[in-house]
Length: 132
Image (cartoon, rainbow, N blue to C red; front, side, top):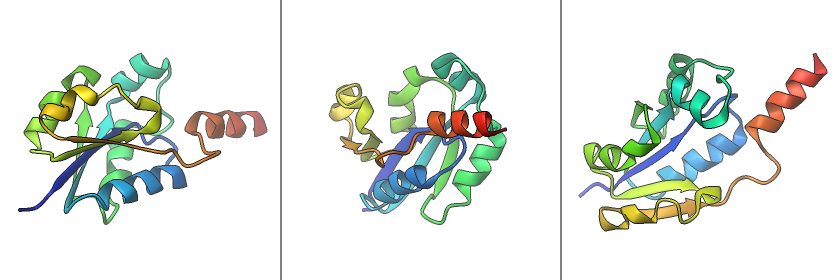
């Protein structure tokens, strides 16, 4: 039986850290489903609009060969619904979320992956902004 992995992120200003987490998530199963944060969710969560629009970020993530399906994550509160909708066996999140999603252990395995050191989308955006 195929093992489905689900992960979530904004994936704004796509960089190697994003690629590594997606590659590692994909290695944990046979099928990878990725939820990309809606523009409105990102605004609520981070207090700013993403540099790249929701549709552009969906296109980037959906084009990756290891991603089998991509969808818009409308709300952080709907994680359980998304896990169930895509019949995920594994939920993968970044280590900075450790413990925050343990409640889903009743319906799937929960894995927290370490972040790629010294790479931050926010830092990249600030660096780009200040160099202009």
